[in-house]
Length: 79
Image (cartoon, rainbow, N blue to C red; front, side, top):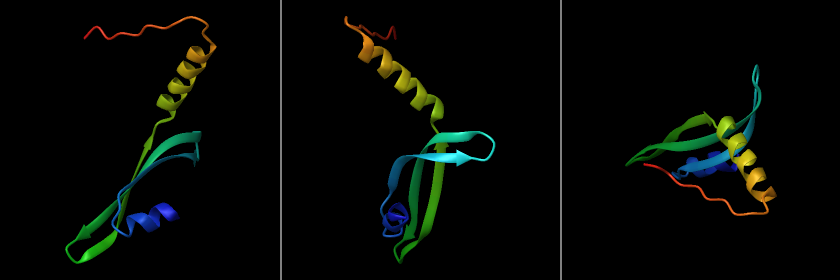
């Protein structure tokens, strides 16, 4: 509710939350409230929801691996 209130005041709001999907079950989501406004004020808000479940699970797995290591870890990008 507070996120909607901020958007309706003209503020762009981005946050992550858990959403229950009818057929997929619990999903990690990134939610953005984007105010629709012009010079006369705010007229509403567009809501953009992205499923980030795969990314969230990958981050958690990586964090678990790193936190369980007793040695160092070197990561590099070949590009």
